[in-house]
Image (cartoon, rainbow, N blue to C red; front, side, top):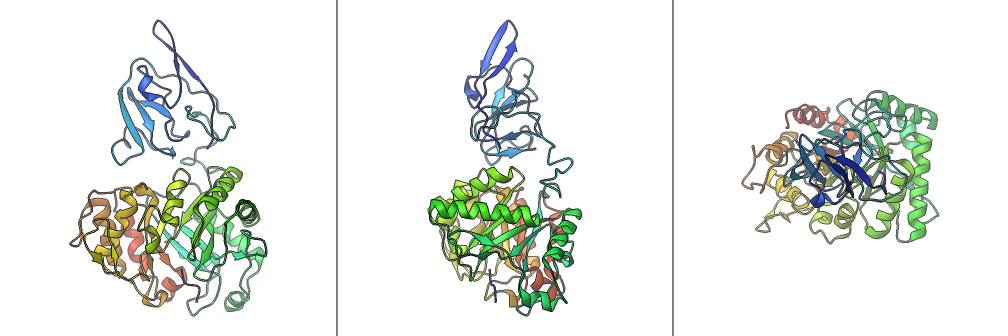
Length: 422
């Protein structure tokens, strides 16, 4: 960007006709009777087993409220293990252990798909949603108080947290120049604005990094400092999560440790987003890409910055695609889709106007075409993705302020189009 669930150790015992059959969660191949019934409110992690409509299913990764009978297949979260026999069994009670392959509880606290909990005040994110960065500085784009963000945005990333004198630790301070530009803005007003956005069903995360960011998490101590300091910001301001926008490099091992520690403190409502540059998502072994894969089970979404990058190879490795086209967006976004990330973890990051980035701006109609191509296989350019990805999450822009400056053309074009995706 430019600044200018719980581990459960349990044995599930189910009474089958003629005797008792013991199931060890995560061992779907040994089960012939039905595993515990799938619950929309339960959290499942990799290798957890559940049954639905007379079939057993195994989770491939973290999931909640995704029906096995609907979301099973090569590209989906559940693997169908085939027909099971007998009635479904009651789920075990949860425990507080941090990791397990046992079947999760079907009676956790309030489901995020129904009524929101105090730690998740705005409810879940939509299936397809729009993200925008809110600028905590005045650089010529329209200065805005947080509550003035247009309703078209579902997720707002506050840019940015500030580094401190402690390695890895961050804090947040309202920019005096912004406060002056909007006619005065206090910390108390900012907190109240986050609460206002929550009341509108919006999510707000604190972004760490940016073009000039100096936050570094390169040690165990720095990882602890990062998790502790972001947790304090969440408690203080009501942020729903954290966005990783470290454009000057990151250590995937220690950042993954920091994010897992933060997740343990906050719980499953924590939103974790990432905004890597285009080059960062070219190879699964690169640090940013590796981080995304390493935390896939707790990662919400990656919105790669498909701008300021020049020409890049796509997932076909046949040609370099120039930025600023449907081909560029589809050919590059299919790289993470073909290398381990789920469609619901991928969104397209674009500048809101020509003034918002050095290069790579496309008309919002082109973003819509790219989303259609990825989700439905329609409106593609000359590049055709190897599959369709109906779960593609949406789009992100830098920034909300630049979009407002440009008459809200970006969000007003893309937001209604998201409702047409499968």
